[in-house]
Each structure stands twice: as structure tokens, then as C-alpha cells.
Length: 350
Image 1: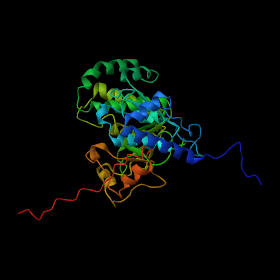
Image 2 (image 1 turned 180 degrees about the vertical axis):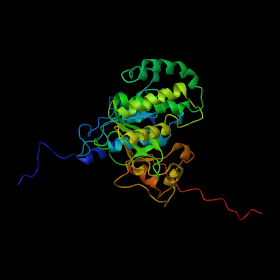
Image 3 (image 1 turned 120 degrees about the vertical axis):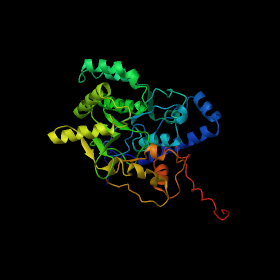
Image 4 (image 1 turned 90 degrees about the horizontal axis):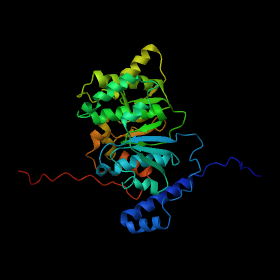
């Protein structure tokens, strides 16, 4: 007896595995010699035509738009940054991923490998001024004008690079909706479309909300009110020494204010959702046989706080990060793992 519904055939996960194998092979050839890549481009074989392009990888509907922001020069694109984007395409192979950057050229960077492999990846420059001009429906034009007048001075401050991205990510989410992730966030499973208008606590005690992962629908009222407050703070009450003034501190205070009024359209998930490692324990992810805080049900991303882990070049074999980087890769030919360097012998010390 025929048991298959030919009108609603289930997805074949093997097709997306095949695409990942091809991406790895192309990446390997590219690392070995540009000769193969140049010839493939000459004969119209690049970008690769992904066979899974029209096939959903999951029976559940998932998010299809992701945003990253990158503010530093091309030489700062590490394998870990690339792997963060890889984890998105691993779980959402048909997603559109935007990298908003004024420092990375649209072509000619390490990010080219995503486009060459057939994934929908786009680098877009951003302008905070243009984004604000699109926000006049909920931001007072006089406030925007006053904010713009102090912007040049604010850009001279030590933490403005972070404050600007705090504001830009909220503007992007308000205007476009979708998923925002920092480039040190690693996706461990698909994000269902039902997960919307959410942030996450960054600590088990639920004292601080972090904006390294955001999922919002367009024109969210919480984002609008938070952006309005951020503009006021930067314009009239700016503290250049307060790193979290328009980031975690503001998100937390705005959420607490809403809780007191029982209003607002935002849900803050447990720290296990996006921050299973408390930021000061993020290094444990790279250490062999350390505890694994990832919850199979609750955890969606692992945040490897760059400030705390930027000096770590390798994941030790048997570590949580070793497994994470190996399981959720596209360019799996490049696995950066090695045993830790043994301590120097003390036998000769007098």
C-alpha cells in the first residue's frame, strides 16, 4: 500500500548535509590554491548552486532573517567570527544573513566563502543617521536633530563603538524585524518562528539583560520606547565611562519599568536560552572535561564573550567548544583544535 503523501513530502536532511560537504570542499580548495577557485569562476561554477536551496531543513517553521554587526577592520575577522555565521547557516541553510559593516568591503574578505558556497549572505554598510531618518514615525524629529548635533563629539569617546552598535541593532530590529546576534554568539539549534519579541537574562540571578541576542517583529513597542530613552541618554545625559549605558543597563531598566506597569510586548528568557555560560566563565567552554551548561531543551545559543575569551586561539579536544565548532560548521575542513601546551618543567628552577 502506498503510504506517502506526494504533495507534502518530508524534507531530506541529507541534501543540506551534501551542501555543507561541497562548501567544505570548496573552502579547502580555496585555501590550498586560488587556481581552482579562479577557474571555477571563469566557467560560471561559482557561486555553487545549492541543491537544498528550495527545501526546508525542518518540519517546523523557523526564522529566515538574521543580522550581525561588524565594526573592526578585515584583518580582525577570525575563524571564530566566521564560525558564528556558519552556525546560523548550519541550522537555517535557506536564511538571509546580513552583515552590517562600514569596515568590511562587499567583496574581497573572508566572508566571500559564504556567497561562493551558495548561501544568501549580504554585507551592507550602515548609517546611524539614515536609520534615524527612517524612525521619524516614533522618534521626535527635534530629538533626532539634537542627537545628530552631538554625534560627532560622542564618536570621540572610548566606548562609543559599543554604544553605536547598541543603538544600530535596535534600529535594525525595529525597522526590519528578525534575529540579531553578536559575532560571538553560536547557534546550537534552529530558532522557531514562534520565538519572537524575546531577549535573555545573561546571569542565573536574572539581574542583567544582554542584547547579544535579540528576536523581534517589526515596529515592536518595547524597542521603540527603549530607543527613545537611548536617544535621550546619549543627547542629554551621556556618561562616556558607562559601557552599558544604552546596552544591557538600559534594556534591563526599561524591562523592569514595564514589569511595574504590566505592559509591554517583550519576553525575557532564562539565561540558559542565550547565555548558558556566565560571561566570566566563558573560557570553560574551551577547556577539556569542563562542565557542559548547554540545556538540550532551553539553550538556543552559546555566548562566548569576546572580552573574556579573545586570547584563546584553540579549543581543547574534549571541550564543549571543540564539539560545538565541529558539529555546527559549514567549512568543516578548518577545525581549530589542539591539546593545551603542557606547563614548563620546574625541575631546573632553583
